[in-house]
Length: 503
Image (tube, rainbow, N blue to C red; front, top):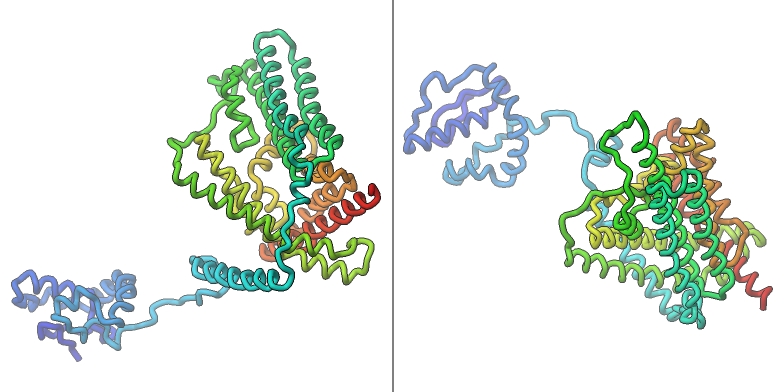
């Protein structure tokens, strides 16, 4: 049976007995261009079934997109041309199912679409649940914030640590002087290497000595040791990179004939304050400083830093004060304490990551017009523990690859020992940043980092055997539940035992 278009002209059906919607649109537009007179009665308009089938295949995507709009009231163009008549826009005989599809939450299609709405739902649920918990905690325990752990009565008198921070600028100047002397042929290459080793060792040992001799607050000691480690990594990169550039510039078969060795105090000064640990004479730069953007990021930094301090004082400190030593008490009790500590500890760690790696480093990069701002990757999707360590802290990862891992491979050290050496360097500096301010050398942080080595190989094996989700779940389990909360409890009780024995 033929179908009448809005002008009353019979339209022959296609093979499935369905009027071609696309041809209806074309005929209607030709009808409108002829001052409302129908001129579509020539045989050329009534194409055969094969031609109609080709037209229908070509316009399948368009028809599918139009289908929903037609069901809701018809296509706007067709309604206008037909005077608001929607009887011919989406016929019941038009196929509603055209190809095989998966449900959006099926395993084959879940990662092919955006989940921004679900993310917003999770944020709303987290805000609602945690707001209730915060109000309940305040009603039950009151305001528990205290500052003596972070800023003791002697915090304002921690001037030796402050002076030590200022004096760290002497070591980059000493490294620059060594490179200048090498450039002017005043000292030989072996002598320059020895001087750089002395400079870097002194730069680490001097702050350690000052921190251990002064009865300073915990926050002051942590700040000094973090700054010390950053300066040490930069000094090593400066000496190593300068040596490599000097070797390439003096070699007969240059990889790049434009490589030239020069020493610039300006480039070294920029490198010491730039958000990177890998030295190079020049960096990609951004065109300008967005002052409004910097102000917004700084406001976020203040807010999230305050949130982090609130969680520590209101939740973490009471939990650890009311707990026993996890290695000296009942096993079930220790597991309960670790699980109770895991959630607020995770919140604090996420706030720390967001404040430092996203907000602070981006603010610093914006103020210095530093162009490369890949300070982290999507470590939350890590398929193994090794992926996490390669993605969560890109400045340190690039430093390790550039100055530890590949130099080990170049001197014929196998891959596995090279990985162990890289983790060993990381473990030493983690122990320095925690043990020195606490004045405890029980090696909990060192062992925690070195324990990551077998986890790297275990999760790599599980990823290859069972797929990515297994490795990701093991990573989150070791990250949230077993690792950090256990270290917090161990260091807290050892610190309290140390203070008790001293008193």
